[in-house]
Length: 394
Image (cartoon, rainbow, N blue to C red; front, side):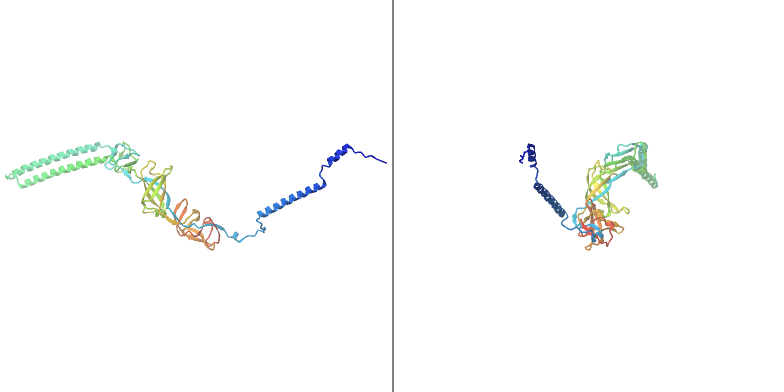
């Protein structure tokens, strides 16, 4: 039997569409490429891990010998040429302070023409004292001179007449001697009266309180109406010439490094202005309690410099060649200052030292170190002499 086969148009179209789907070979090729990419990624990760680990095989942790030995930081400071600079503090004061009080008999103060902060010249009147009674005494003393002078003139006239009569024999030589003595006594009384008048005038001149030298009046402790006398104490204080100074308190070791004539820079507390000064005197004694001495630094007058104020000073001292260490490296006890050094066997050794000047950069070691030693910088207080350490160079 013959059958005709017919092709359905729809089936034909569907078959054409299905022919566009990937074949089994294409799918196998895609999976192969995916596995190749994954293999490359895994290999790259392994290579990166090896590079980060340095290619070394990890070993189990085992404590090394160094973990039982403390590590300390050390430094060989060397020795350098250092310009000496000493920092200190002190009090401002008048270089030559002159207390002025009542010199004469004293009395009631009539007026005070000057005040603190005024400049005065030598001999200028600072306070006027009432002299009404003393003036009357001066007048009386002047009158006594006239009385004594009259008596002396009368005694001289009597002597002259007696000398004329003695030649005629009317007066004896004894009378002449008596009249001569009377004349001499009268002349002497004139001299006494004049001396008393001079004394009275000198006392009156001392009633007023005057400036013994030119300078700046620092203090005034008297007012009009006040009664003053020789025991009243200082009524005025004068800075001669207005000159000032700083009384710098310096440690006895550093005081030896300061020379007379050294130049310093002073900064008063409460301001940024600086002033130049010169050391003109060093204290010959050192305070037993503070172990400090005084360096007196002369200053020119400036309104910003007030006696009694506080100030800091930086003084230039002699140039030294010595090591310098930070403050943390230097220790001290009852035996003095010392440092710990690490010897060639890595053993801690105590080394006594003598400290010098102190600055912001550190403390100068005046003696005890050459600068080549390995000095323990920190934690020296936790070490003991003879201990073995692991030095780490700063």
